Length: 533
Image (cartoon, rainbow, N blue to C red; front, top):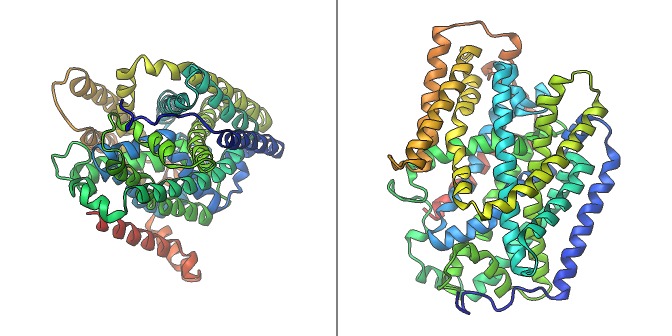
């Protein structure tokens, strides 16, 4: 890599290093302080169900923006264009859907995990399947992937340290406050990390825009295609049909069913705070275009000869930012990494404890369940540390694992979506869907990924399998009809409840009415997307 591409020195000035150390010490101290505030499983796993909307929204945002995301957004904008932002703005639309339909049901039920919802709607098989799948994806893909991406950047700063050393340090730091403080520590540290991340990203944008010679100069040197969000149907990155189908479905899984995201909403003090928090997170996704994606586009003008897209973000940091500012922004990068790690560790621990341990050992009290959760978090932290360094040697394997999502989650999506809006879906239909949907996903994975017999874009995989699973669920439920329980009915959407809510909302001020806020968020989203059509 030539001198223009590779910054001369990735080393840290003592001022920047001090800022990082102070940040680490503060984060661990906060986790230890919060550890004194819980003594039950509900306190530990759901922060006592007392969280308010700003904390929920900021924590959702921070948990979503990992170190992998920061590197990927800037890198994709540099190499293929800003279409990668489609995953971000679509989150706002999906969170509106979540706030309107699913959120009140899951909060009223006072469940601990999303797989628990599937058990109460269908059967224990659905719960076990989804819980096991989520744990696998959280630890093997999400946590280890974030550790590895963060380790690569930290290795640029500390080249003398092996990557497993930096990964271990990062995992242990995040693990300490997660083990001690539970979800409350995760949410409070996420809030600080989100603010730091947003502040740092704004600074990078300002410095990058200045170095690029202003927005007009960027537009004049970057192709219109790279500055367009809506791509042709044959586009290799985000074709418009894949955006409507694949991105929407995978986004629903991530924001509405994935435990490590929904757990923040489950901690809300009431339905209103849960809804406001979800909508606030959706709002925070819109500026991502300007502060995390477009700096990668500006890098095309500033560093036109970069050989590797994953070097765009580190190069922006170390080439553009002065001493002191670099330390703050780098702390924001580390914050994103830590937020992803603490979220996945905490959610995986919750799933193991509440979906498996509590089931097999029903005599455990709340305090004992909390202790089990702390032990499980520690075990997962060690497993993540052991697995992450191996990704460097098995790059193709990790790429396969990342693609697993499109093939693995459609059966669960069918249960959540069809089962929520159609009361005719029953347990026999659920079992058939999980069995045949899993077999179909495995078969399609080998056909499309391993043997290369087909060349389906990954954004079309999830919709195809989802339609197949939905058909299986509907046909099997019709062939073997069964009356569902009253508890199962409580996990389906009711128009009468919706109408009752409509009446009650008339007494609320407009600024507190979540439906008004939802419409405003959708309008804001449309304006942003329309500006870069």
